Length: 99
Picture 1: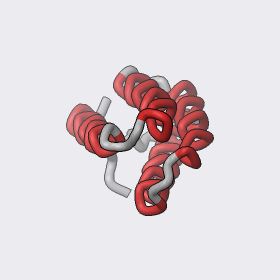
Picture 2: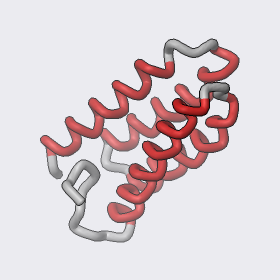
Picture 3: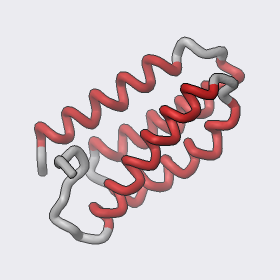
């Protein structure tokens, strides 16, 4: 396992989640819940579960009214969806590894 990479990825999740906590619950609570789940599965090295929670998070992004935050979250989800796919396919690249 790539411990420094995982720590960096967990920090990225934490930063995004902290930013989402500034939005009203009706806009962000479901998205936060799904991203917290994705973070948990990233920490546990479970790429299929990570991808599933990222898909759930993506479905909740439209609840945000801030277009800049929507774009930021979508880019974040796309990045980690690609990373989880690499992990699930058995590639040697770990989430957090440099592209």
